[in-house]
Image 1 (cartoon, rainbow, N blue to C red):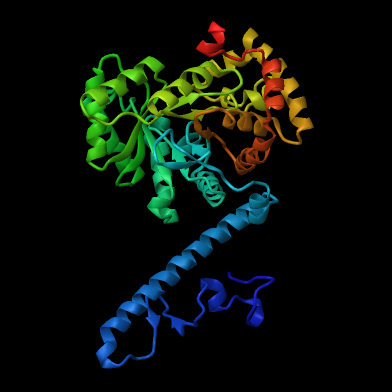
Image 2: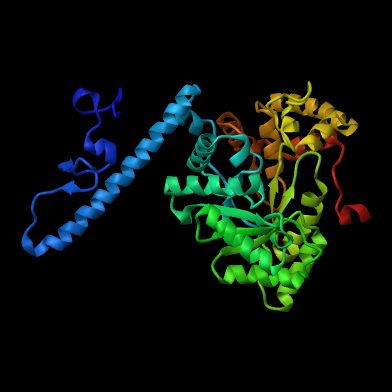
Amino acid sequence: MFASRGASGKGGKFSVEDLYGFGKKMKALSGTGRSVCCKAAPRGHGVGKKNESEALASQILEAAQRLVERRRLELYLRESGLSIQDCQSETQAMLYRNLGKSGLRVSCLGLGTWVTFGSQISDEMAENLMTIAYENGVNLFDTAEVYASGRAEITLGNIIKKKGWRRSSFVVTTKIYWGGQAETERGLSRKHIIEGLRGSLSRLQLDYVDIVFANRNDVNSPMEEVVRAMTFVINQGMAMYWGTSRWSAMEIMEAYSVARQFNLIPPVCEQAEYHYFQRDKVEVQLPELYHKIGVGAMTWSPLACGLITGKYSDGVPECSRAAMKGYQWLKERVHSEEGRRQLAKIKELHLMADRLSCTAAQLAIAWCLRSEGVSSVLLGVSNTDQLLENLGALRVLSQMTPQAVSEIDTLLGNKPHSKKESRA
């Protein structure tokens, strides 16, 4: 199992030092792998030696588990004609940004689970995606109670538990609003925020999430009740921060004002859709909120559900998101007159991407990252090739010069204007 072409030792096998990274050779492992055979220790040091041996055995087992997981990933990548070195060489070192004006540092690219986890892709593929993302510096994983009716959270939680990554080394976010069919299982009442988050934590097998988002505003719940409930779950240790998703600037300001009035905790981030054809909120409204109250932006759908990749230029492929059950709205959007106009612009942007020696997807993601106040862009991918391509957007970010951005604005013809520019 552990044979290697470049390995040292007899018969081309790894030595114990090679396998586990220890400078000192252990004598042997028992047949069950549960204990380490050591020389008998003097009586006076029996307890200390036993504890030391148990700790060393635990370290060896953990190292062996990591090695087996790495081998599984290498085998999968080899079948795809790739290697771990290829994956790492194609990407630049990850960049990290503060989430709004909070102290939380998040990778500028995060991995989302909408549509994919627990639904479109297998659990094995989900694990491969998370492994590659984590090894390339991604520390942000986003999900929601409504994704695949909770299965996305279950899949994400199982992978995190299996990997054994330090909980302090990554950020998990989830969203609360649609939890079930009963009237009390949806919305932003105090009851559902608390019970919904407890359900998410149970599915994720975590003690806490780093950020809990209100997955749209609830007109039936008073803002004070929402802010008090979010403050409660943070004070109870169920979450570190809270944020909003698809809220208007006015609603976010109201939540902030309520928090300040009653000495509660305000939101730190808004999750918003952002791509070439959805710009106003992230480019005009959120920067004002960032400067006034410190709310950052975590954006999603940088490729407009795949439209920007050009995959829909010749119709809707059978394996695409627009062909999936429940996504008729996306299919209609592709075939609409507006959709055809957008596809024509996308063809021109593909030519620009060719000039910059990158793909259309990489250009679109880098364009999102260049925007002021964007803390992180969430990626939605269904295979490792897409993930590696998207991570390559970091190399393109340096090419987002004012001239390049101006050229994109001219092609799109939809640059929004701030209030100051409008008055001028």
